[in-house]
Amino acid sequence: MMNTRAGGRWLVAALSASAVLASGCTAPVDPDQLPGVYRDDATGGEILLDSDGTFSATDVSTDGSSDPADFSGRWEFVDSPTSDDFVYLAVEDGGLGRIGGVQLYPDGRSTLEFHADPDGPPSLVLTRATAP
Image (tube, rainbow, N blue to C red):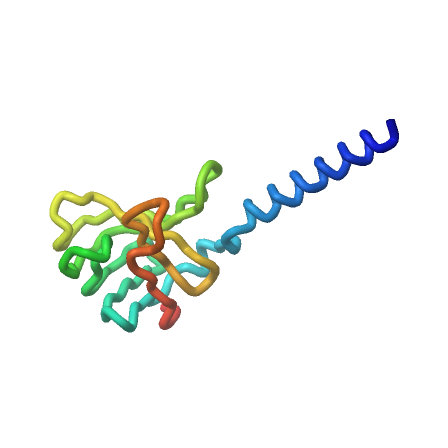
């Protein structure tokens, strides 16, 4: 009987540790720290998240295969209880055609990633260049 209890406690401890590790895949994001210029040196693409809630993107390909475009609009941080937190770009003007919005995923404090395929690797990684 003693071994069953010990085994049960071990299983609970292992499951708890797994849940903590799985939920800690990305660092917590402070939305107040997001404004700034993010750049991909390889492509020259750049996004400015302004502290007033507006953004502008220059030479950015959101899916990694289309031609780079310039676009702008408003941004907001979405603290999602069911998935990864993200920055939603509501596109109001520019060269994305019918696309009304794009999601960027913060990875720590200094990078933002586009994911054309939610289960695949990022199609573009932008690294913080400066704060506004």
